[in-house]
View (cartoon, rainbow, N blue to C red):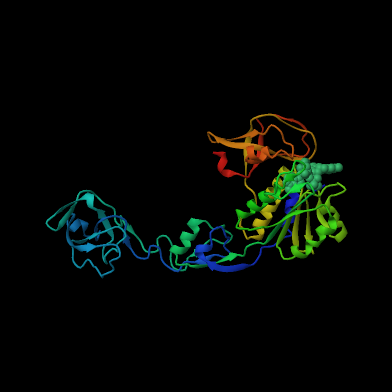
Length: 405
Ligand SMILES: Nc1nc2c(c(=O)[nH]1)N[C@H]1C(S)=C(S)[C@@H](COP(=O)(O)OP(=O)(O)OC[C@H]3O[C@@H](n4cnc5c(N)ncnc54)[C@H](O)[C@@H]3O)O[C@H]1N2
Ligand code: MOO
């Protein structure tokens, strides 16, 4: 059986980035930039004052004994041609206003004595103080390194400030999500004591929404492989398909049976892991990724987090598409019975600069509370069995970064 890390690498090596589209920058939040861009402007656009004060020529300081005559007032947005024409002249200047020609330093109002149209500097001042230089932040034509970045508000603001109003982004992904199982009810249907709600599909759909993917929910497919096979006509319009359940060894395991009838080969079937052992992967018609997740809600969630999301992030052009992890100190004993890799639900907390991992009381794959309780999957190597004692440091893959604080 393939190990989980090799399985992930194998899928990643079989998918490619999608193409791009050009969209207004205002709509580019949570989209991935397709290429680096060049600034169209200097920032700042001209030498301007960082303070309300007086602008003067630093060279004059000694010969004028720190005393300057005020020539006028310059406000932000005033672009008249002000100039220091003679020795010992200065201008009143406001924050953001253009520094007059010849001046190179600004002293704040509160650091001068002002009288009869003159100022006298009270303290020493450095050359260039309080002047924001043209192009100090970015110059016209400088490259903005955004390729592969998942654009946030501050990135959009950066682009706008650089005069960029249209941006190339990776196109959106079209993903199909389908649950299988005669025992399932579509969320919203009238409760029935013999049936359970499809808890997987919405988790998957909403996890994808974080990346701007509006996945199509195909509802619940019955345990009838001929019926399931009919869906493949529709799947061909998608960039990826995600199913849950019907993938292990049961007589009615519809996904397994449909693939067998269709003659589609799995890249791998089953992974040496818990939760999610039945997880399998194929390329439909040699190109469309098909993620066959197990039905147990914890298994389906783990496989979406560990496999589907990094793979979709790669397809979406993310520069960093892998999951993040920290090493955390285990705060309670755990036991491990089999020789699979375990990804146990823990709640990681940052305490005094140290990550602590509190394990959930049970690690069974049907107990949804464990996902709700935790924020990370702690990895235990395949060969280890028996007690995993408190105090050990474990690699923990975080699925909810904010809750560690
Ligand atoms: N003989 C064997 N049986 C099983 C094995 C095995 O190796 N040999 N593996 C077990 C493991 S591990 C898992 S995990 C499950 C997963 O099997 P399937 O992926 O085929 O899923 P089902 O059997 O159809 O369902 C499992 C479980 O999950 C519930 N379920 C299914 N879909 C949903 C949904 N959308 N929302 C909520 N709950 C769902 C379903 O009712 C079952 O209780 O197989 C073991 N069996
Ligand atoms: O793989 Mo299953 O999710 O171990 O229960």
